[in-house]
Image (cartoon, rainbow, N blue to C red; front, side, top):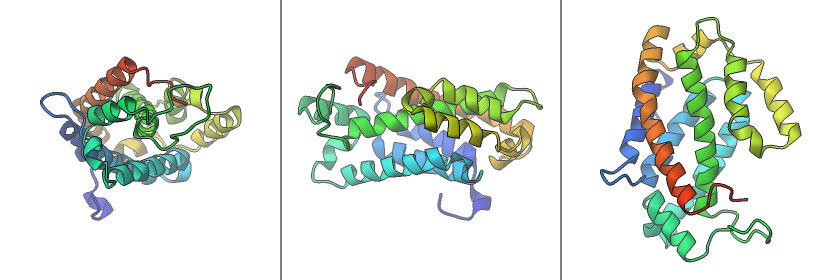
Length: 216
């Protein structure tokens, strides 16, 4: 996905999330990282308005790539193996009352990506199901308020809300997906979004089982 912008296609990115999953339902981290890089490219193609999210995502992807190249890399092959390793060896800060010892743990890092994926999934679903004259600022704000807003300070929430007012129209968003007409983009989202949803749902269940959804 490093070719010319004309080669960029959001459908390829969304479908790549299908490659994240093994037949046993494991989430492969190399594919997860690669898929997120494609989503960052899509967000950046829309201008600076999403930089507050894409910059944070990039920093989290760099942490995960470092873990994949570390001496413990074999424990970071899949989301499941990572959780088992870090939880089993107490390498994750589960106790919110104590000082953070592992701010760059894989579990904490992927949780931030997981939350951002929830926001983007809801926003893209809103684009898919909304009428032609829908305000993208409202769609994006609704998705943000239902997901990331709970983890941001009041000042950040206000700044983000103002930034969303500069979002392009729904038609521009759909055309930026580079899959043809607005109608074709809507059809593509209906086919491809379930791949993101499946990865999200498996990750959500795994984190819930290990009480990791509220990591500080």
